[in-house]
Length: 313
Image (spheres, one colour):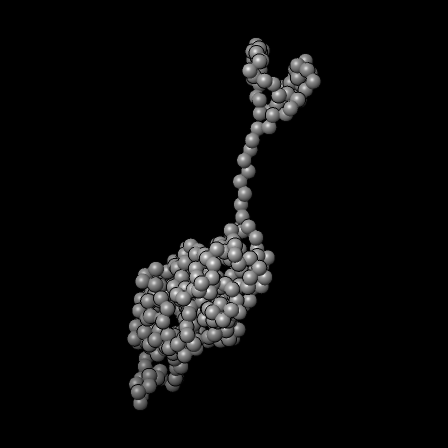
């Protein structure tokens, strides 16, 4: 959004004195949201642009991107971007998060590992099988390792192959056609599939403004508008809500989780000093020395023990 000058209405077009303005741009690159095709993706972002035009009184146009490379090539010309949370976390740059897409007010949703309908619902049955993952970020494989596989084994070792696909629709098609055995999708895309595993909730796509292009009062006005969008997708998105850093970072936190092991300390009783208490009478010492059985050390005789003790004291 650009600095606002006094405007003139000429032939139905808003013009600043001596200048003409192109529309502000809202773009979407969120391959984890299921759109049946490019036309449906374009229709969604154009509805968002229309909602922003109504809320801000300025001209907006929508652009949809199917590939990360295409979005990156145009991001400097984008005023608002709607991006998958996992992609945004590694590619934010000048983009400042202000809102998130929501499903009935919720900004998180579980991810599911799904298989073809009629297949086993046991993950161990799929060892050595093929996994299809959306290739928008490098965290997807780590997420599978940490969440679904509990960090017991890397996804790259558990499955015979991990195939990167362009978007969730491609992943679903791969499973349906038998080109992959499993994939990872938001809960809600599992109709007609077998659910193998369900994760805890992860963030829905983030809405961010380009701070290199949007500043001052314009930024605040736009922020309010972006937090109150009521545009549905063909999937489960019903609008937008205030940005929640905890929800937005859930995917990355899970993917970065390392397996931890707790050590149980058990006192060991060396055979050389093991005694049977049932037949032994322990004589109390009268010189004030307290004997700690967990610090026991083998010595050949009591006199030798006393000598060592005196050395330490």
